Image (cartoon, rainbow over all chains, first blue to last red; front, top):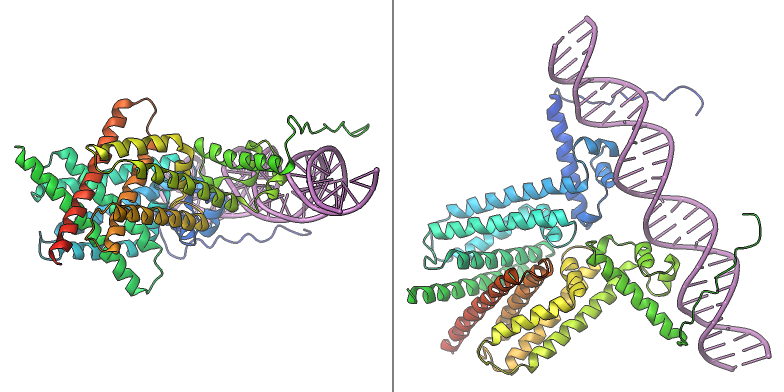
Length: 227
Length: 227
DNA sequence: TTTTTTAGTGGACACTTGTACACCATTTGT
DNA sequence: ACAAATGGTGTACAAGTGTCCACTAAAAAA
């Protein structure tokens, strides 16, 4: 510790001439991604520390505060982003033609692809949905409800189960979403490149949805008869 | 730090003349209960520390090691206990007469009571089912599968959905269990003494089960027709 | 130009955590 | 009666945590 202060690195900050706030957004994104990456390695979000995330993002712990007040706040942003992803999925689904043969099976395949593509996000939401911090749990539940409602609205627009009162329709959609989330966790901890297991699993998934839709049809008929 | 060693409390150990291993079991139970209690106060099991649990149990941290190697091992015991609770529920359900009117609604009520009675256990399993440590997750999943299989066997014995192949029957039971677990989390974070909300929720629950059973019936018929 | 803002740094703090070792006191087996 | 086993205690340590403060250098504003 003898001599002068060790030469301060010039902080090698400008590999490219980015505007300041643009670079801020970059490290912010790095922090978010760092949290997701850590979860991808088996850690649960709730157990992640501010320091840990900062380290993974290649940034000093204090820098964290320039972006989030605490880890929960970062989590909320992750929830929000996952919500956007979900809504994109719904938008894609809306583009599908109404009721061609094997539509169900096709939807399932699309969903599977979507989950595998956004693996970390789904890992995050299905792990924190009933696991960790109260605030996150509520936020996620909120998003899921939102998603459910939009799905119900889509059903209405397509004239599906037209006789069902809104409450019942929402309940049916709730079941579908529940099944989707359960399937997501199955997809997530499926060892990769196990085509056989995967096919088996998605066949199961299809059957489950079929059962729900059967039941919904019958419920719909019941309401039709009592009119 | 001047004078003599402070008088060692005689450790006030024998309020009652219990055998040694009996007393060991007591503190062991205290540790388990302590963990559950902490979860009851909003903490997630994964985030519990050995010291925290020991403190809550009124015991010095080191004493923990006399009972469990680490917190995960304690968690496994909790899973096991929850499994026993679940099987007790199933045994009660088996005693119910077959198919009297409103049997579904009655079962739901029994289940609700069961969840509220074993609140902390259910809180534990539904929170760790897809949240925290990998080992716990697997153990819980194992127990749930076991429960599902027993339910399927019960269905068989009662001759319900007799035409369904075993795989399909298990899938149906899987859906029922999934619905039960979802309902459990709803029951758990329902504010107490909200009879109206509770009634609404259980009505929803009944309807969901009804839908599944409708669907199962139709599936059963399909298999009957193709025979 | 000069001044102000601000994303990021570095060091320090009080605190908690898991674990190791030596120790005790009572129960247990002989 | 004596020795062994054992449930529980106390102290200590290295490592990790969240947060505070002072600082810097580059970008933005004046």
